[in-house]
Image (cartoon, rainbow, N blue to C red; front, side, top):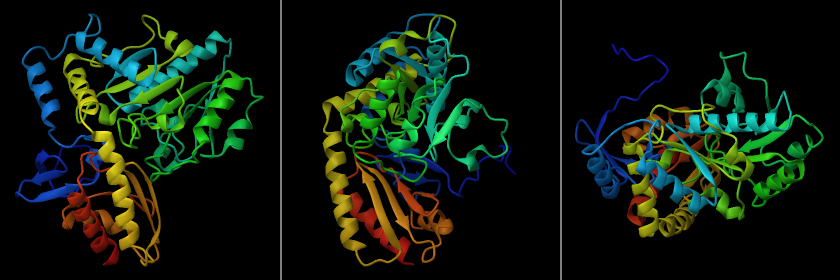
Length: 387
């Protein structure tokens, strides 16, 4: 009997070692990780650069606090701002906390405009975290169930629907729009190519903040370091986490312009956020992206996966569609043909790690995956979907 609370239902496997795209369990069996710890170990398990940074930093200093200056943190902030064309960064421990900081910035922005009951527009089926504020921002009733009363300052509109956002242009209490560049937890929902551009246009016309939750879709996942780069835009606020630390807990809320000036001493903080250890890991992540061809590999492997999948599954009636941007992959299935509720366990028996969202397979394989490993992945998917 485990003493852990029952909010998780872990599968009956324990991993003790990881390397690249592979995990090894207590029996010595190897598994192809097509989920990357839910989009976290983007550069693969135990990447040598990040491992070395962690070891070296752990032998020098793990933690002080934000009462004092932290060299790694300041260097990471400078690099992130330069890469993302932003002005300031607040470091947290998770994506939910980064989004929480964004929400607090929007509240302070509202006060600067004398708006007493500010509203943030978010998207149906979006996911922003499990704190009470980010849970309220999330547009999924199944995630919110049992936690009412929620914060009421969020209005959920349909994703990839510009008219749904533009409907509120005359509402003087709206201060921001918060969306994911690609909806991850909803099953990899990819909007129209110009959706974010149009959202930004509306925000600029109405003096609203554009807040992008890039927790899952950024850090190379879509073939660009930041997902919104595909649109050639810069948001007012950008939230990052997951792949930023490649396994260690770090989140970042980046802001530009007036949004970067909202947090002042005493308005927000974090005990562990941006400490020497996690920022050393994140610096290693950025180093790998800058010194290797990871992004080129993402785009090449994305095209290869799509081509091979469409060839192998062309006549498979169980597959309804494939949604893919970089190595963010959603495969729609016909639930009348395939029992999606059993696929995660079936895949595990074949030593494959995937995720199921509704009637879709969701995969976020490491960005360093090779053609040989994609061939293995495709063959396991054929077995999974066809049996």
